[in-house]
Amino acid sequence: MGKLDYAKAKAHIAEIVEIVKTVPEALQQRCFELLFEAAFSNAKPAGEPKPEQAPEPAAEVKPAGQLDKKLPPNVMAFLRRQKLTPEELGKLFMLDHEPLLPVYKMPSGTIAKSQLTKVMMVILENGLLNNTLSASYSELRASVRDDGFFDGNFNKLFKKDLFKGVGKDGVTDDTVIELSGPGMEKLAEVIKELGQ
Image (cartoon, rainbow, N blue to C red):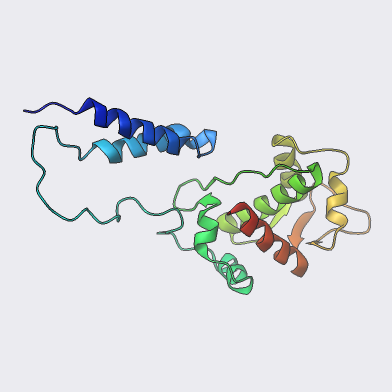
């Protein structure tokens, strides 16, 4: 029985580590495990000749945007209206994973822009999970606070024409925030920006 080529293995591991660095921190360990398994599960010892054949099709490891899971109807309608593809959503969320995992990275910029981006992503995530592009004010506030973007101006965000469900008196914890027509367009813009 032949020995493992340690130089090749070291090179594979270095490549895997570089790929893992591009993934959000919460997913890095799992990403490493999957890539390591894919790289070494079919590895033959260096002394054994490999049979000449075409490389296996990439059916086992799917590209980021390829989906097994069907998207909810309201999300599909939104994608069609905004001329977006499911693959673009696949760049922002691990759609085939249970539970749904966000993999987008919040852009640097002003607090107001970060708040708007986070609110849009929470509403989109609710659409993917519950088939409704809306979220409660308390859920949005908690998400923005968890990401460190909350400030005293957060409520002013909902006075923009991007949102429906906000009364003259402002918002309460029970207020359900929905996207208006311009809000849907802004969400499409955010999806494209984060997917680059």
